[in-house]
Length: 255
Ligand code: NAD
Image (tube, rainbow, N blue to C red):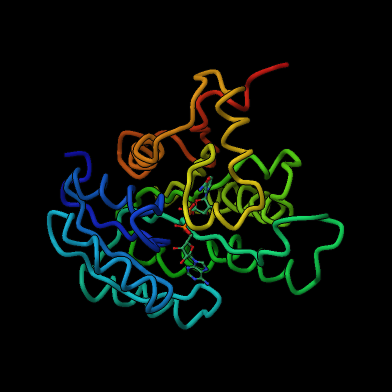
């Protein structure tokens, strides 16, 4: 029971395929009390279908990270219910479909702003609102992808957003470390989810991973979730400001 007596907020659950859902299940399995935030009614319906799989009912709160009031209301609801927070999972990303294909060069100003607002600035907004509730410190983890540091075909503006997210992780970690709040990134290999479906030729990404990763296979979502659990838990108490790769050894391979 790694998360006994802990309270966790998991963002980014859209349906049973969401990486965030597997992380919520792992936190629940290890004894954490849970708050789950969702974007809108469609996502709420997805959650209602699966929420019975958890050992106890979570607090369900709507949260649109493009609106500061919505983020503040979400954390206020967590505070009212539990009075504290020990871990926060950021599993949110969005870019327009037309910006996830073709040339990055052609990304519009609006598309760029939207992708960076939802996928990168949202971590600042959530962490700032969560900080007063993290009275005993804790672990924050944000999901990222290799497209932040390599030019991955069709990942385009999302790669730039992930670079901003990863840099933000280091700044947040440096500022919040004195309070015992740790902030890390988890860079996952490709996993079939709703967000992944928005990337053109995503199956080609899965095939390339299977061929080139040291483990010669794709990852299970549970493998990603268990690493996120570790980063949320006291077992990673000495780790902050890092990007941990859960990619089956794809990134480190040479030719
Ligand atoms: P997903 O579609 O299940 O999750 C994305 C979530 O972002 C959804 O729940 C969606 O509702 C939420 N979201 C979008 N706009 C929002 C907004 N304005 N406010 C609040 N929430 C909003 O897909 P996923 O693949 O599980 O994505 C979770 C995270 O994992 C993302 O950051 C993604 O970039 C990252 N990631 C995914 C993969 C992959 O291959 N699937 C690999 C590495 C990293």
